[in-house]
Image (tube, rainbow, N blue to C red; front, side):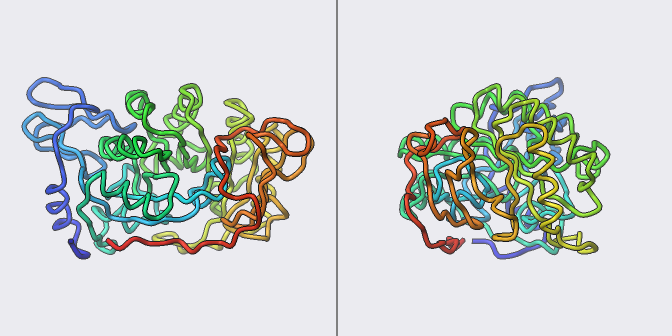
Length: 373
């Protein structure tokens, strides 16, 4: 176990948890490589590290993270958030270190920015894929999710974990910024069931300040849908940054153009990390964003992070009769009125991957169960 240490020392420690892989790299002349795990497509001469700080060219071979976790917790799948996946199911979430973005309001910065920011620190736990899956089963989880840092940059490890998880009957999920490549999405497709994308706004200038490009994330969402992943999209609505009517309206129109069945979660910002200079998002702002989504035809739009204050917009409603088919308060499931993915009242299909719902009556909210690392 490694306690909180400086980024430079941590970088050396992380190198102990790397192994060679050619799955997501392309060989170039003079022992250089092109990494294709994320949209940066880093050119890596021998000895260089990618933008993410965790993928390294050593002697013409790409070394990638493997065999540890930096965060591990079991909590409801609704917290990811997935609202159209197995209501009430528990998900074991695991994360490593590093990110290909550098968002000033990151709510997982203690892991994602640990290799850039001395204030973060980190703690690592060595583990095998089999051990992670066993923990999930012991915790009663039906789903195992790669999150807390950007999972795309640790995709080889995720596939190793997910391959074992599927052998044990678990479903799998990514919680990602969507800065993907066609290569990595094809690579993940046999192993990832559910994919949540953070669409952080609809202004490319904003995206470039965070370290990405809007068009890359748009392409990812389109490709995920075309490849048959179950996709849900989240936009953290930040006052003064991405909360204007034109931006949210355009974002909603884009999603509706991909599919009106993609759930869109608009969630409330709270001051965090380096962005403590503005107020929390109000319920009124979220409700306005919900209206934008519904006005362009999106069937499932949710307001999040303000339990009980968003006028029922945490519930899933039937697109046929309008009745509530999944009733929620925050991450708590109060009732489910679905049979085989169809509304109990009118029989209309509700888009999702409902599976066998473990909840058919009011459920007490379980506290998240952090697993010691």
